[in-house]
Image (cartoon, rainbow, N blue to C red; front, side, top):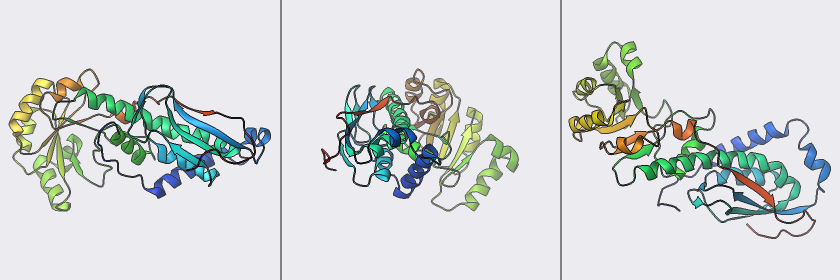
Length: 298
């Protein structure tokens, strides 16, 4: 691994469901008419998944599941695991299996890996940018619908941290909640009364005056929204360790270092998932499709 980072395993049922849906979308009613017309059904092919850019690998469980869904006996050898750094030209994995299956699963496998590796690679850039500070880089809920579990996994592959998974696992009181509930005090007290003792409560603030008001209550974290580094330093000083401080808004690779140096605990970055570019990966056949034994074993 590039760095000792705990990677929670992707739940098998989520992987299977997502891969089957993606394959069904691609195959439609008639299947892979190009491959089925041109490749012998008994042909065996040896291929590699290679990186065409420098980056961080993520998404292998989904890619491998795509190949195995079409060829249960496919043989796969992994050279770079999720979370590891690769250079352009590196072979990430070698594959030997039914040529039709490998060709048909190729795009689904690469779509998942390219998307998730892009997120992991961008996350690593942010993590590297704040190295030496106390700040941790975290994601947001600005994810692709249906892919949140996988995209948040990719953030972990890049060395980042996960924010709340959804609306169900933490309370985040924002300005609209305060207005709709009739005020800050009522919002915080109602939240505390309605969630379990293990559920954390975070409140978003836009000004130092709002922060002072929030600190009069029992909260676990404050989200310091769109504050300058100078304002963030003052906010960290006022909090003085009473709760976790999270900076958000206006964060990019040019500003993140100054934000981190303010002393905040966390920096949440929506761009990790909504603006990451796909990492350029390719699947290349290394030998001509042929009947016979597979060249490698899983």
